[in-house]
Length: 123
Image (cartoon, rainbow, N blue to C red; front, top):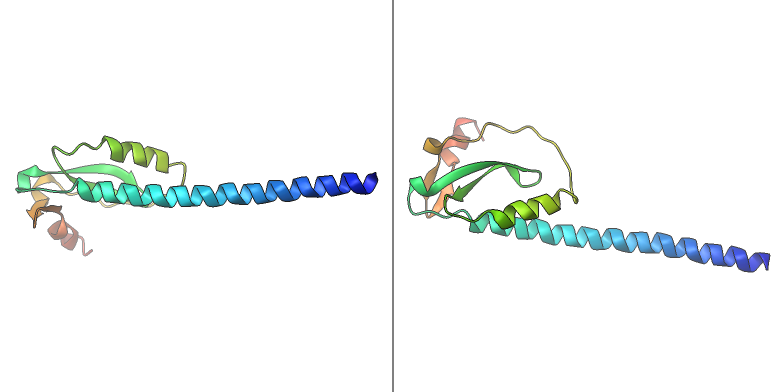
C-alpha cells in the first residue's frame, strides 16, 4: 500500500511538471505569434503620401521600440490591444532617445521615415 501511495505521488508530480512545461511552451508560442502580429500591424500602419500624413507615437516599449511612426488616420486600436496583451509575455526596460518632432519625420517611398533624425543621433 505504501509503495502504491509513493507511485501515485510520483505520477502526480511528473504530471504537474510536464503540464507546467507544456503551458510554458504554449505561452511562448502564443507570445511569439502575438509579437509577430504586432510587428505586422506596426508596419501596416506606417504609410503615407506626404510628410503631413505622418505622426509619431511613443510608449511602445520592449521589444517594439520607444516610438513608432504612423499614418495620422491609421486605427491604432489593435496595436494598443496587442501591446497590452504582450505586456504579460515580456518585460524589459531600456532607455530611449527623444522621439522625433513632426518636422523631423518625412514620407519616403510611401513610408513615414525618421532616418535623418536617427543620423543626427549617430544611429
